[in-house]
Image (cartoon, rainbow, N blue to C red):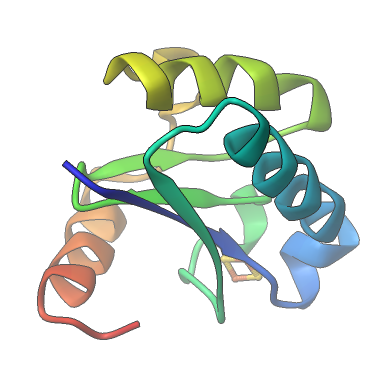
Length: 106
Ligand code: FES
């Protein structure tokens, strides 16, 4: 199933390096020919726990992502696994964001 990795590019996440994360993720996904698309997202409302990356429609949320986490995330995208140590966002917030994405609110 096609996966879209939404990388938050709003102020708080950007101040913690999300622009660099997005570049790194885009490069690695292309290099490894993974069936995933990397896109920016305006804000997931989890600004205090960013940088945040949400994988849709797999309902995976990675919080506090660092550049060194990217290879592990890419490997998980390739295998269909989840990097559980980065899955620390509030379940209620996750549910709201996953519902919005399911409804096509990008
Ligand atoms: S700034 Fe990234 S979730 Fe709001």
